[in-house]
Amino acid sequence: MSYTIEQYSGQPILISTLREDYNPLHEIQPMVHDLAAILDAAACPMILIVEVQFQPDDAATTVGAPPTNGNQNELFRHPNLREIIFVSDDGRVHLRVGGWNATIYRNVNVCAFHTIDAALAYAESVA
Image (cartoon, rainbow, N blue to C red):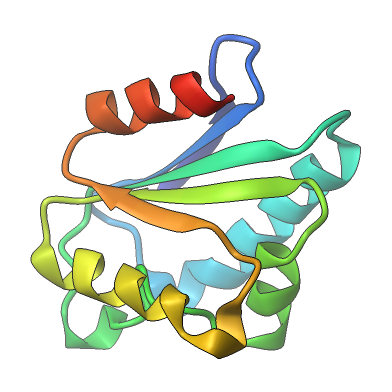
């Protein structure tokens, strides 16, 4: 697997790291399945941090963008998913995250940071 999902320090924070060899075209569905299983078993709503270590290109235009796939839509509206935080130094990811503010994606809290430390500090402050 070229991604990991782990709980951070026993807090209601999940960190999903998409490593440099992550391929969203082939791995988004298994990752969504794994995240859904964790959220289904969670005792309380969780904050999801998605650390993007691979370099998104034109084939990976979905990173940070609102989901168009039904399974992803269901995940991002999961009752145990409180907020999504993307971490990337790629400005395109930050731009796409802004798309979540569209009316059709209401009730999904999403933001982006440039570093994992900033994302964790924010997540801990709102957890």
